[in-house]
Image (cartoon, rainbow, N blue to C red; front, side, top):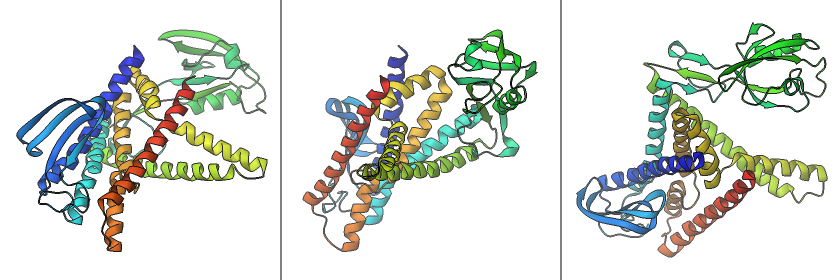
Length: 386
């Protein structure tokens, strides 16, 4: 049931984000004299449709609900660059086309700012070491130190501690941070200490015989630790929402560039005659694969886990996806908003006509490549579920 509920929450969240994105295109198109022919929720085949004489998107717009329940679309009159009738997208000026194409990106950024603002008010987890805040208006709440992994054969595992246990006291001393536990374990190495912890809300006590050496790097205690911090703001919440959106946008562009570089070098260096180079290249490709999730990973793993954890992780995940949609659509890749703009700009600079056949071939090829990537990532996601 958790997976089913998570999939439903994920579909609703992403559909809302994409519909808002497409609505941004439609509203700006209408405001600039471009006719909106259809606005659809989901993708064809059509399940229901109604034409409205007047609406926010203009006159005689066909509104449809479609059977594939992921995302949505807006259909403009005369979408080819060379279309020239009054009301055609193609007949609009380059500046108007730029505004229409960027409108969806702006809407997704605004949605991310709004969600991060709400999270700043109710309390959001720290997801970056240097996460943007206004120090004078930031209230930090720390949860107990939690075991995120317990290494087999180490003192923590032998004492019966498990993943998810929260450490309350260590050697009769309260813990303020994960670093406290690490330093105390190093100071008390070789000794047997008393550990007070909670599991499923129930307090327990155990004795842990700490290691006296740490040559293998497994630690004197033998567990990976984490401590979730919650950051809450009041009057500065909108500033924090905007600042964090800018910060995460930069981080997303940086991560994307790093993944592309690692993926490209990993593929090329697979043909190296040197075994060590091929091994490093394979590690880079594995890292890229682990950091990318497709529909199966998002709907089958990430959203179910977030929805099980509560409303705050769901809002956080939705905000990050909204920001990611904005970043992805800024990329100058055919079929994406940024790609459509880049192709139009290139032919304007070359002073050559962008004929419909060539335009469809460029963006059709881009779309096929994107679908191939989605299929490959989906296959990888399924492999991770095993």
